[in-house]
Length: 111
Length: 114
Image 1 (tube, rainbow over the protein chains, first blue to last red):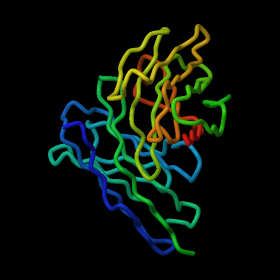
Image 2: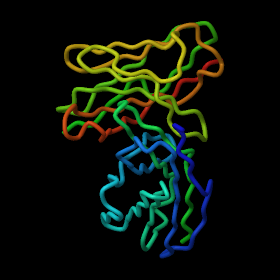
Image 3: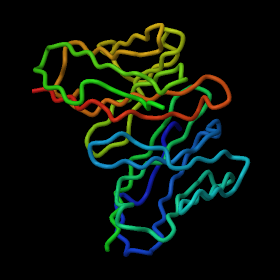
Image 4: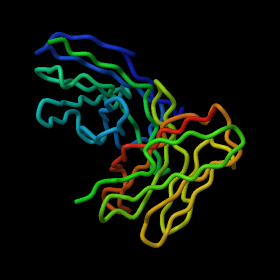
């Protein structure tokens, strides 16, 4: 019940494409859902986050779609660039003060 | 505005040894969480410190311990190292209050146990 399931494991898109990464959770106590971007050898960097009271949030080229009834949320990267090539992690947070992370999606954007 | 800093960057130890990793939180933050990230995996929560006390702990053995100092910096100690402890150890800081759930990560310490 504490798991966050992330898919796909890896993704290859052409430059300008719109990669979509999906996450699903079970525990309805989760109330904050961030996405992190991680480059090799670096720590995760916060990209964008959403709370369950909204269905969509956009920040620059990054959009989160949230489906509370299905307990699913996804990250869309508009006009993807080779510099977006990285590993993306979704996470879920509850009042127990800790993040539960997904298993990660390795994205490669071809030039 | 300094972000989260960690030291050392890399560390090599042998089985059975003990290690101490250090973290300074982002300026203005008062809470520090530690995570272990094995190669190809997502970060796994170890524990969180606030007001110099451990607030929450993940599924890690007692070999993993920590400390938070009055200036909010923190240490992670691992005793009796095992090969399986080889991982990237991440520190994340946050601020108790409205943005408690927004955590910022440091660059990590790469620990290799031989």
